[in-house]
Length: 398
Image (cartoon, rainbow, N blue to C red; front, top):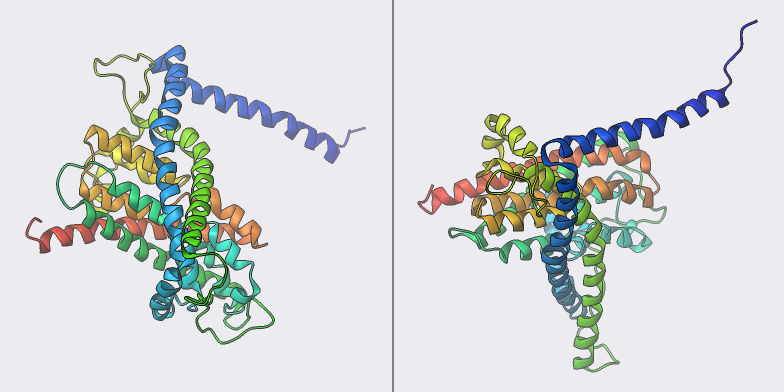
């Protein structure tokens, strides 16, 4: 008499198999680094790299976030954000196929981070301007501008050989805009097939006109001007600290791993356990793909491919790699334009899109959002590459 396998026994075998598979993959991963570097050197390099990133990169980014958070709060307190919204409103429908209210999401994420758009999405007064196929594309629109001002300010603070750093950052921002249009339009196309063109995100809706908070400039009663400035700046700076703290895990974990894959041994060709040593895997892959990557992104060195790869998981970690490359002199202004575009447009979307769609109660749409945004980020880098080449040509340096 044959024994039938119950679902419980099958599930038990799967649960026993999972940890063994994980341990096998973990041991293989450690061996990949430990064989050329030595296990002792590998462990010392991991700790030294993480510590160096924490002190030299994370706190630097946190300082930028605090200052820009204070500026963001002041711009909001005195109605400048409202003014910018009004100026951007006529652009949203022809460029993105979104109502003017979406301009508020662009600015809020540019001045903070990807999840900032979720606080707007929770407001019925904001949702009522969107049809469903537009509403879920907000994840792509907001992510394309997440940490924009922090990334841009970070790039402007780098010491790069050659001129045109400011122009490179501006071109990078324009590249991110192009990437955001591609990503949002692709997501809207997918969502329209699911929800149709007519269903609104809220039962109560209005025509898609501008959605702006009332600035009430000059009419606000309460604290004095000086107190408003001080309170806004300190509260904004506090939010900057929170952003700075939130990026530390991504920088230390992701950036340390990417550094191990990107960097090589010390100057004499040996491994010493110092920070930023590695096995040169990514540059070797980039060298093999140079015939494809060079026309697309035009990087000055194969190591530069580590930046967009890292930006998939964390924009903060990607800027940390840019800082190291700038100190070693392996990047130029052209690279900064492409880095700015891709770090802004991708800004860690692989780690945020799932949670953002979960918050919007449609986790099943995560895959479509990620595919659309992957294409959008590539478009941002390609656009920045060729726009910068065009800029050099027009200025007589191409």
